Image (tube, rainbow, N blue to C red; front, top):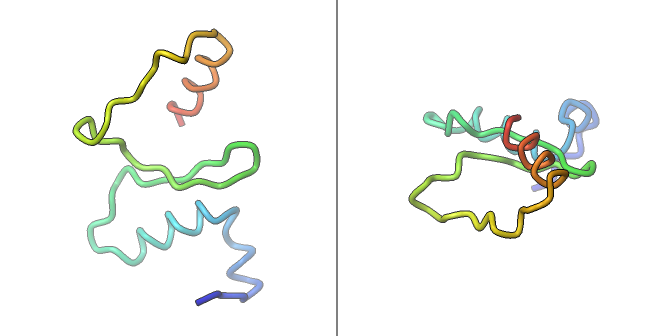
Length: 76
């Protein structure tokens, strides 16, 4: 179902924001680390990555400017 109410549409900054806020409102025990961000003007939902789900491959991350960008994103 698509909501095309202008007031509702203008409340959210992007789909990641809408999804995170809606999920918190609709779930009794929503993930406390659920959030949202935007990268290059594209909205994303973010949540905690469990250390038991997958291990990240950091080997490709070698340049200081790339590290700084990742650190900035992880620190939000």
